[in-house]
Length: 121
Length: 232
Image 1 (tube, rainbow over the protein chains, first blue to last red):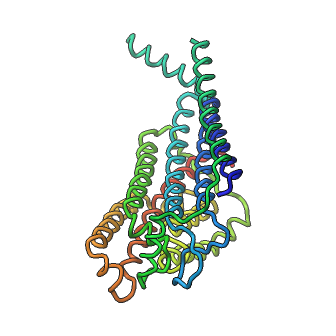
Image 2 (image 1 turned 90 degrees about the horizontal axis):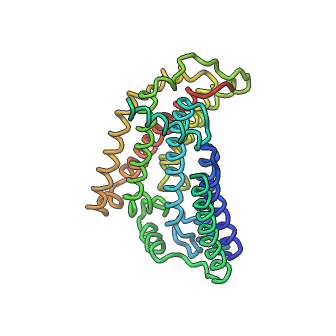
Image 3 (image 1 turned 90 degrees about the vertical axis):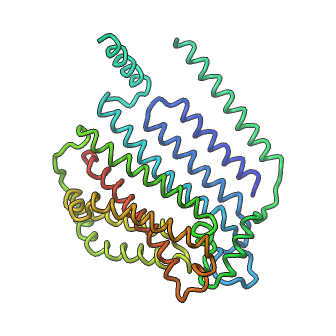
């Protein structure tokens, strides 16, 4: 694992987390979440990278095999990323259909007004 | 109120930047030798000892860490369930107007002869996952995106009539149960299941069940998004 490369990976995660907090657009938030996910996968790749590794397939003939464990974990990460992204896009579609905006602050205001109207009636 | 939220947001940013900055400095200062992990070496050696399995990654996600795969499948089917339930609960999402398919001759002409090739490639990846690169997840996703090509070429309604989700749903949970059963049997009798059987029928069955499950889930998700897409 190269030090500079891992530092850049952590920097990408930091950018994604800052985007999750600072952006008000819901789609931008989902994009930031995707950036964090991709940077995590990149970090997994960097952790196990050794020059001259071969894929862990085939009989043991004295070659240097790569670590199979992070590859299986990355598989899990990719599939869960897909599921989370699909479900949150669905929720975004529901919110946009109901409030006609992607701005999170406006959506919070609308929800608060609806809640107060329900309390009064 | 506004002033309070701005100061809290600034605090969040400062804390996050300091935490990640410390991590970056730590990564720059501490050098580390790339070394295969201890558990990974154990999995590698054990997988290569079995004559039926030559892909060590399948050995990890299909045998030794099947609980990871199981919970991954559960999370995936939870996402699919959420999408189908919410698309039923929110009738305003389904516009009802039948959208015209993409009017591109390249897509409509290539889909009819590209789809069988894509499907066969996905099935091949699922069947040969214990021998070479591939796997159930990859095969299922390739099959699902192949149907996405069909849906873009011929329209979502027609393709949805051909590959019905509600009848596929029953297969999905059956397949999940089958994979769990094989995994439990494999944990109880590892040599009988994974090693001594003639051929590799049981291992292939695990991969085929994972591929079927991922195929149905991917198609359910993609069908929802194709059906409710805006004007292209």
